[in-house]
Amino acid sequence: MINTSRCREKIEGWRGRRRTYICLACGDKFQVDTLESLPKGEKLCSHCQDNTYPYMFTDKETGIDKEIRASSAEFATLRAWNINPKLTFKIPQ
Image 1: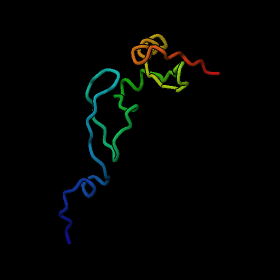
Image 2 (image 1 turned 180 degrees about the vertical axis):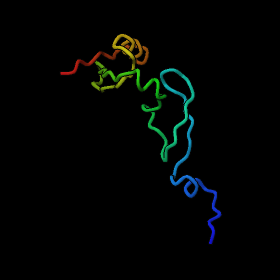
Image 3 (image 1 turned 120 degrees about the horizontal axis):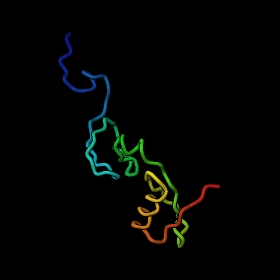
Image 4 (image 1 turned 30 degrees about the vertical axis):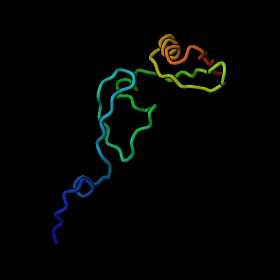
């Protein structure tokens, strides 16, 4: 019996779908083939993932840590202060 199915799982051998996202850092569109959608913090294109680093900031009032991705500590601080002016740079110990 000949298989006449045209689904991706039969043709290409994997399950999932091609999803289009907008990069949180640069705003460009990019596509990812995944089974599940990407978490919000990971919606970065491959160029921005290679050229940015995670920096940790702490809210002075609540004590909650927040990760900000940027190419340098100065840009990370500016981005954090735009989000919340009470965020302070957390120095790793």
